[in-house]
Amino acid sequence: MIEGISAEEYRNTTTLPVNSQGNDAPLVNSIEEWKSAELGVTVLSKSSSLRFGEQISRFTNINRGEQDPSLFQVPSDYTIKDQQ
Image 1 (cartoon, rainbow, N blue to C red):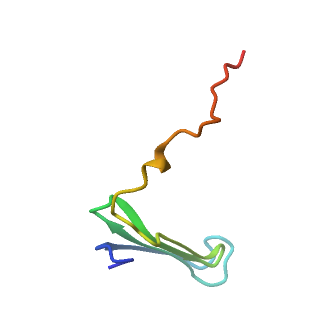
Image 2 (cartoon, rainbow, N blue to C red):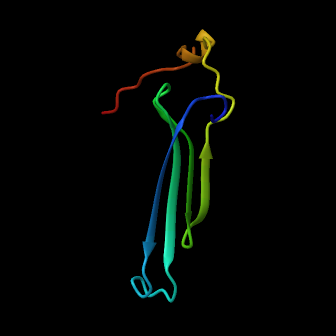
């Protein structure tokens, strides 16, 4: 469960051997994703590597109820201009 949403974990770890990138030790890259089949999205993603460090992306405050219709209205000052 991630943020109250049922999710499945997918994990991929890759180890690059010594000297494959000019490295003197093995390089380990890992990606962990938690995917919700119900929502059709990844609700949590973590990646880790020596080159880029750790990166985390997470959905929060998930609300599956009806959304305010104003969120989907075109702003009153919106205009379309033809480019020539």
